[in-house]
Length: 149
Image 1 (cartoon, one colour):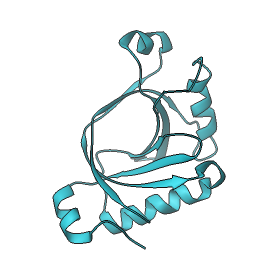
Image 2 (cartoon, helix red, strand yellow; image 1 turned 90 degrees about the vertical axis):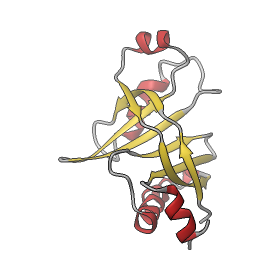
Image 3 (cartoon, rainbow, N blue to C red; image 1 turned 90 degrees about the horizontal axis):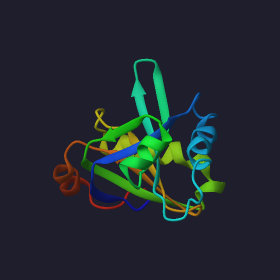
């Protein structure tokens, strides 16, 4: 698995919470997607939050404007900027069973920043970026290199 280290910029997202995890993920995305005339050119994220009650998943859309935020009327989630480790899963739509395992491997190897969610960025129906927030990018880079088994 090829790992990329990056400074993830802050995100402000229109969000829809999955009723259950993982079975409610598709419905959360559909709640947002059904309001859009096209998905072309739109950035969508999946956000995984650890909570006192377990795990919450939210689908998120980068809004084009404040007006779009208001028109949707959905909750807004703001994710602070910070360092992340990332890998790419190709043909992800046919390999969704690998997403949790790959995120788990990155967390086991690099740790995680519990103040920010794990994220997936949908680049296309073929390409999914998996992002795990970490606390100290410089320390991790010098310690680990850029790949793992």
